[in-house]
Length: 289
Image (tube, rainbow, N blue to C red; front, side, top):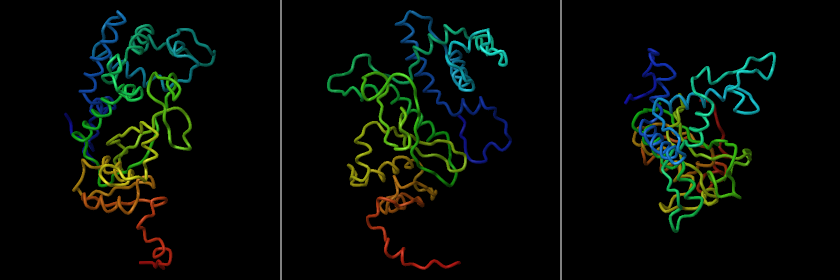
């Protein structure tokens, strides 16, 4: 229920856990609990609770701090190296390895029907594994975080390991259009507060068509990059904030649309040069002032 904003916590009264709880939507936790318990019941395993799910998330974050050849070794009480003590994650957290594995196999973030509805593509059905989570996150940030005077938009990637790919109909679909990020993962278009770095809004790149239509006009007669950027910053329209974006989003049309929405815009024009006064600016002598 807290509203977070720039310089709003100067007294430093919040712990890292407090920030996590304020940033993680309660509605998402309820949905995760409901869907995970459905899977546990199907597996005839003991149902979980909100408290246990929070502990699970904490262990998942803690695991990222260790280098190991297998997850099971983190629960071992015998060290694999005489110079490095055993992690003993079960003793440290109070969660046995078998219970972690049960929860891990049953963990769900969104609603997805077991059987794919008629007329729905495989990829569309698989994206339902995270669709609800993205929508809830976007709504939560819009209602509970007030960004600084600068909003930045960019592309990022959430890397994953394991099942999934363009050759298999299981897990999340695999599509990455970022040339310098060839590994498996999910490409994300996002906006973030320019000062704190807090992510504000997400849009998943789900299909190759999303990338190929970058310079094509969409249903709103806007270039694709402009439409995406408009979606990413729209909740903060008419606030005179400065929007910064790279060449994927930038164009003369983007500048005009954002100015009409009450924003200021800074962007690099590299490919979308239509209506850009390139000849005039290349001949213009810049003076100190």
